[in-house]
Image 1 (cartoon, helix red, strand yellow):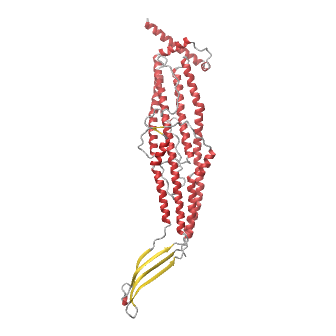
Image 2 (cartoon, helix red, strand yellow):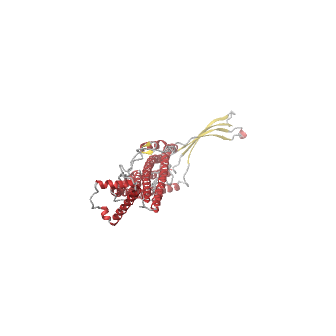
Image 3 (cartoon, helix red, strand yellow):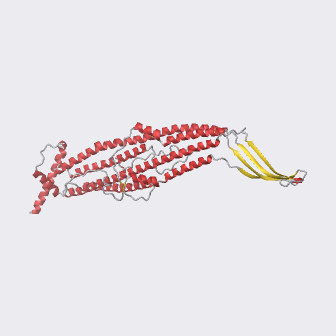
Length: 499
């Protein structure tokens, strides 16, 4: 008798569920705006009993949120400031930049040093000839540099010192920007991993529910298999996100100059204190403060000094030569050798054929090239900043839409379905699907936040982003804008889906 009662009760419950779902499907307006009176206390208890009978759990709202990884961190909790200090201490490119300054100063010193004197032996008629004499002695020669050539050398190489100092400042900017970008990418990867784990867990609940509905005849084998396939895809996404987080961490450790840095959890929030940039002001600051502009201008100044130096080259230097020698020739009646004699010479080189005219013409063209380079650098900055501004503005639009439109609506839809599920007017798979959609939108929101931060840092950091790019040496042909290496777009989502 008890077995018959249980079977009858189960059949009645299934019939009620089918009737309810059929009524909802036939009248969607009533589904969204129910006109029926709220269920009584007895009805609510009866519905909850039906839930329990089908082993479908009573649901509590579970919403996505950022910052959970640092609430129970795996490993050390690391602040951005710690990473910046570590990079300043360990990044090798900063030491390269400082070494280049010292080398440029040494070259400047060398360029202004006076030529060394020459000391040598001189001999004439050493065998003495028929008089048994000969002259042997020494001489000293010293070139006298005229027309301020050495001063112009120092001034010209002083521009190299200036360029090296600008390069050092630029390298510090590049390293700090790279550390900040790496930090936000790791932070984004942390948040992405949490979101993927949530979606995978929701998919696991959907698989369990599909199995329970199949047991009571409310789902077939194909629905269970589809739910399992979706769960396995999301579990694969979790594994890929774990790998992405490890690789982002390795990249960050390399930029700070500490590849052995133990993997931890970075502290911070992607959605707080978001950067706000004005496009016109950002371009003005870039053109005014970019080290590339200063380096290009220093190249013009150096070329002008080089032209002045080339024009001074035809002014001859003075060559002085003097010495003493012992003359053993017997010329006086007493039969004694002549003895110690001295000599002196002074001369200049006559620039008749070679007046350095070729180098002067080349120096004029170098000035033209350097002046054109300043214009090219400005245009290159405008062109490349346009790309970053476009990505920044698009990321800003996406963040605003996710935060103010998509996520609130998805959350509201999920909460409504959750409430309807509580009174048996919405199925459990519907609730799980709404919850999964909400968490997937959170995934896109995180990606948009990452893009916003990366592009804002790039713009505020004057387009300097590669913290392991070596500082250029003065005179390298690609020196002024080689460091404008804009970052790549935020990483694509696992399985190739874009938010």
